[in-house]
Image (cartoon, rainbow, N blue to C red; front, side, top):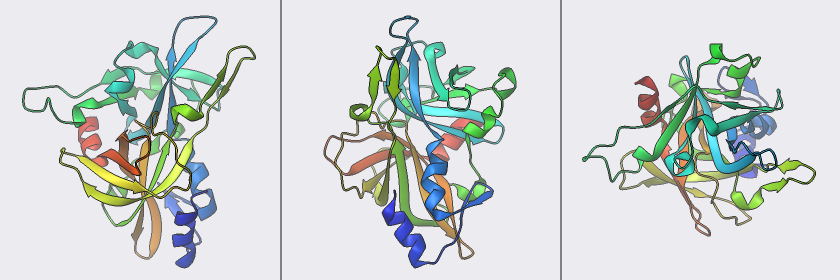
Length: 254
């Protein structure tokens, strides 16, 4: 439970928090946001060992475009049509329609943002009911840093906390959620730092690609908006680096 977030909302006597166009009890914010953090499944084609796990990703919707955002260092070693997300309501994995990636040039070759990847899902091409609901609808008035309180919510699937048992078979997918505060921009374009306020230390390996949401306040009410995706962290450091939502929105518009 994100106690720090609930503490802020409680001190302001916030009875509801807006996520997208819907209002939710503050105690349910964490549960609602979980669904937009997707574990990446790599389909191996092996009957005995059908899956590999390459960390986290973020399912968002910019306008009519449905994208699963992640990093190149997660998936570039495999073919795009082998990368899938799990849809709980259907109990099945779903691969993407296409892969988007930034064009690398001599001028940008040393920047972090060229590591961003976007798996696009053209919804009408799938028979999966309500697939669009698996994607967080990014609103213009909920794009960081607009009306930010300085508080962030991070989600991801740390490698050390995942369990796979091929004998049963069984997959134990354990998402981590943690609050954070803004720690400033980095020297790399579109990359920022947040400092986690966690009580239990875990290795951030596997968190890359996970969503970064932020708590905003407008007209006396609170909302959760989209801040970006995690690009890297460390084994013991409280600092997480993320690519901001404005860059991701520009990438989606191309």
